[in-house]
Image (cartoon, rainbow, N blue to C red):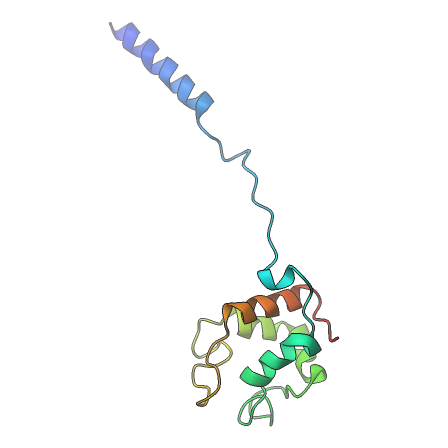
Length: 133
């Protein structure tokens, strides 16, 4: 009787091992570009500048030097982009009300967060070497 139970358990264990899915052979899905990258690559002049003008480049922030960097044009933004601080503040720390940008204490009439589309557009722009035009 014990032999029967042993054989049944052995066969069950082997069947389970053979027919169980294994994550060793699973492949990760291909990364997909954000929706905003599907048709074309955004440029600073074409779309990113508008986002920056509305959420960053205003008096008391990145327009008059109150905050580090003057974002009146591509030249003012590119140094922060190249250092990695732009991605860090806008994308990586966006959930932090004190460190993420735009800040939660932005003045009335100014966005305190970016839309999902704006975030995807900026991510696409950064991933494609931040073209100016």
